[in-house]
Image (tube, rainbow, N blue to C red; front, side, top):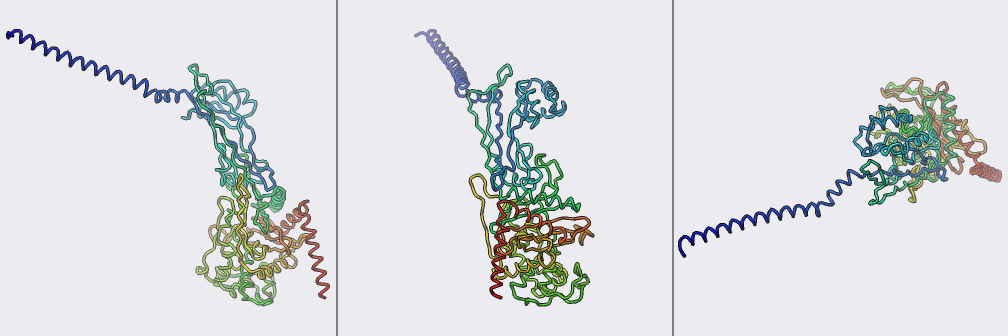
Length: 580
């Protein structure tokens, strides 16, 4: 091969190689493009489809209906009623000003208020709840973006009478106080949803590719409250507060054996249908939240301690002729002029001086331990949010004057339900029972009885005899009830000031009693805070108790209490006649 031919052949090979490289590059580019197209068409389909759907689909919440709150006999206290609620679906809205104009023309809200709410970043905006039915029909189908939904809203049948117990829900239907707050998770149920799609023309329709999730109603709650008892307690507390122009008042009625609360009434209260728009101070259950110095109703504790430890003999003199006692410069007096008094008389006539002397005989440690056994300084565990444990310091911190004050109910603070449960231990023959406000949630019973013996039956019986004498021979005579034996104790306490000392002329009057005294069924506490004019518990709280009990024993289901009490009294009289 000549040199020329060899060069031509060599050039041809080099050209072929270049062509092959070029073809490989073309094929590679083509493969990359094809792969990218395949990826977009096959692998990214679902991702892009999701993006498109998210811009064109709207999930609308289906609000669940709250469970009902019922009394012990199944009568409604809180339920849900039909209301019309107004929403705007923002993705379907063409003009905020047009929507605001239509809504304001229906009289629901002002134009500016609607515009303000439409500034929300939410796609489904709540505009107004519980709108008038006429406005609902006027706005329905006006614009695709305006949604009028028929939903269930909380409604309280006797909003003032039960508000301290039930509490209330906010406009979002979530519990904010009371039972509504404490059991919100059980009451609220589970929200559902409906998915809508937006057409290119802006119209909204239900998405055919998604199934709805229906809402689930919340569980019902059954309280221990009895509607009839609550009506009695509330009306009487209201009447006595009005009569004496008092700051506030309350009453509790509890089953002695089980600890079930049949009534827990406060006055004044608030309208729970207003979603907490009233005075926040009225939104508390005062029986478990408010603390006060108990005064003479606390004398039960040193009296029980004296009997239990046998440190005072029956008939032993505990108050001598002096009507004034001085401890570390502090003057202690009795409310009324009282002569020489025995232990029993000191309790029956409620002598402060007598109980300072009784305290000295039993000692700090015994008094403290007895108080703690009876629940002083500890929460009762009742199903009410915000329960307070009170203020009761250890006995090693008591200086002489503090110890003296505690003996007649000053220098410590308690809740009403604490003192009620302490007295109930005597009514229940020495056994302390925990108080209860809820019987069941849904199908689950919450009735957990916690019992503990705090004193012997013999000690409880002796204390019961003293409490009976208070009503028939002492400061509680106006608590007597025709046809039923009663045991109880009065308490008139000066109100402590937050600045220290006591507020001049301001008192809390209280009475705790149970009936029938020989076989107790119910225990009742009445409290009037800052009555004007008269303030003695013997003149206010005691007759309140009489009114409550008289109305209870005249209820058809409880008339047997009077009959049974009368029969027991007659049997005892016959036994006494035989002995004589």
